[in-house]
Image 1 (cartoon, one colour):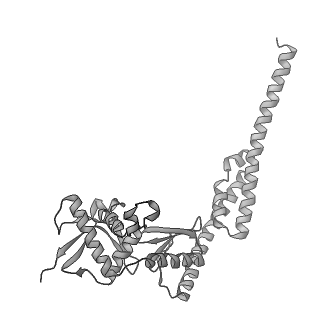
Image 2 (cartoon, helix red, strand yellow; image 1 turned 90 degrees about the horizontal axis):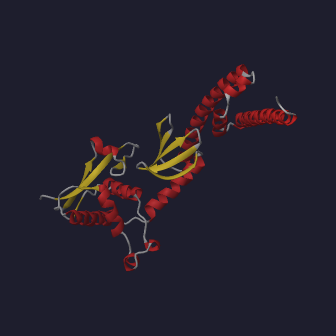
Image 3 (tube, one colour; image 1 turned 90 degrees about the vertical axis):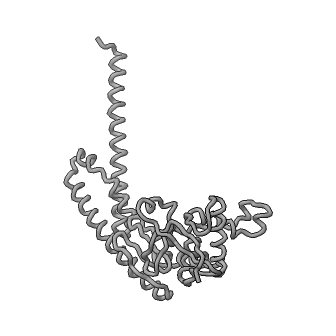
Length: 292
């Protein structure tokens, strides 16, 4: 038989149990109220990222238990329709604005794919994450920077990237000579003969090293190292190819395309853009003597 103290304690335990359950319920309902507020804000401001995020937090099971299944289902359907419409509208608006901005800046523009959106803003490509309204500026599939998916932001980023890539360039002739020297260094490291193929991934570090100034070799600290990225290397290769400088001082440059499984090893292959945004993966290079 329960004592008065037992009755007291058991009663208190039931109160606490129900109180805890109600607090959890209220917390969940409060989260759903915030979701509704966010959906309303996103609808009025056409904020696509906020709309998608809010829709992800719609808890139809919770609202079903609250007797609101019909209303929650109708809301989810309308939210998805609104989301699809905004995606389409913002894709079109971005393409239209970017095309106009490129025309004004005298920069070549082309739409490469519609969904997901990808544009050619020569010599770069721009991939857009519509859900986040974020753009990625790339050169030969190497990401250079990210920015909000707005035409002015993208064009500004493209201008800065173009200046950075071209500001530290030697002449195409000097780069050709540098490439030959880097090729010879890789051959020496691997014990190979002139004319044999070596992977571009092995040539890049040698080019970066040969581009360093005397200060670095006097005291090779990080502060005195001049960075040279894969994108810079691809930019220089593209300059040589565009200048049709494939032969110089009795040797000819021969790039080897990547085929089969080698294409899957993205860290070992190098994609060279064409003027139309298309291109080819390359794996290796060699220099061969020119026969006269």
